[in-house]
Length: 230
Image 1: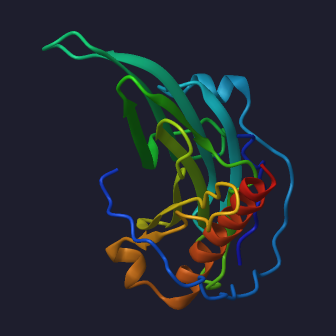
Image 2: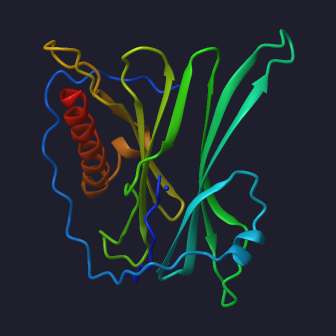
């Protein structure tokens, strides 16, 4: 059983995309055990103990059988100059890190980190965590919390799908889905919305796949509704 105290994130490549020709099948996520929730985040003094270079978007505090832990999500936008030809590219670095919280609640070294470094040269760039995409669960009832989060990124111009990444972490295990949002132009059929699981997710138990697919499906459907409205 996992007791969770959490604050949802305000705002918390190289993988081949596969175009899905058929609608994604409906998936059912196992019921979450009773979870205690609150709105308790890390304070400024606690954040100062971390060696963070990226601006913190938000924090999330949760407790499982391993003790108190905190997720810190950050977004850093900067410019990178090519040392060879001097061209300047825009970069956005998204990071999600989990820290242990001892009795003093001062975070220790990061237990794990997920980082995506997006770079664009001369085109539009956009990336960020999806609002309310973070969830903390104990779907298998083993006392170790599962953390699911998602973010989007875009490098291009015109009307193109956004790339979407959905991650689920349970302890040292990581499962990742890479997909795209659908785009509709006028009355033409929508394009995009393909997705691909990494090797770990493809071989994961069904409840893990269901959790990740459900998160992606919700984000995909929201993007489809917005695209159709526009």
